[in-house]
Amino acid sequence: MRKFRTLDEFEEDYFRKHPEEIDDYLTEIFQEYAQDNDSGALLSSLRVVARVRGISEIASQAGMTRRGLQKALSSDGNPRLENVNSIMKAMGYCLIPQKIIYHKKSSLQQQSKSLIAHACLVPRLCLRNTYHEVLSC
Image: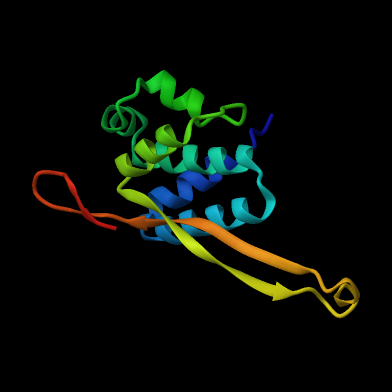
């Protein structure tokens, strides 16, 4: 019987071979989260990146146990913002708010003159000094 890979396994393999793509991937998943509020998908994607970077190392740097990190990033996880921030810092990123840009809806929806808001927290690579303190984001 042939074993099929899951999407997470495929993504992990891809990012192990192409780590330079992780920055754009993180930006994209946070933008998608801002639009659809699907925290399960966001956490699943962060779990993929954490696996690529090393669960034990990320957990240690985030001040969490390996099991705690995996639970926080599970699709059923409900981590506090402080935990997400710690995890992102451990991966070398910080969360930066991005200004909301309003666009008018399509002409069919313009009759109600509603506006669509696009906003997100965008992960940015944090610069660190030799003492591993965040200098700027």
